[in-house]
Image 1 (cartoon, rainbow, N blue to C red):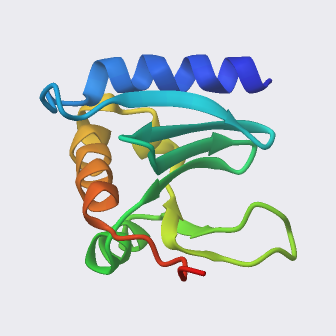
Image 2 (cartoon, rainbow, N blue to C red):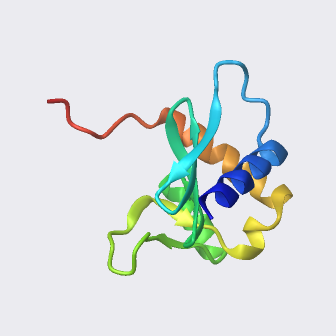
Length: 119
């Protein structure tokens, strides 16, 4: 399953991302029971049994929630991942409609600074 998720993410990204220039490297890696996509080492999208999830700013998440997106929770009683939304299936299956959201996710992820405290 992990390999199929990773292949699906790669295929989707090949179809929808704009030219990000030579300074942005996109890669897909194993992520728990699915796959995740990274831009310059920063995660911006996951595909797991929960669905396709994007990391987005608050206003973008709110707009997608109005269109049927939901909060991301990897496990039934696990914490909600606050910067992410699970994309509704009808949008996830429409590469043309999904493209601007993925590109916004990449830009947001590249602009977000690490929240981890330095030791």
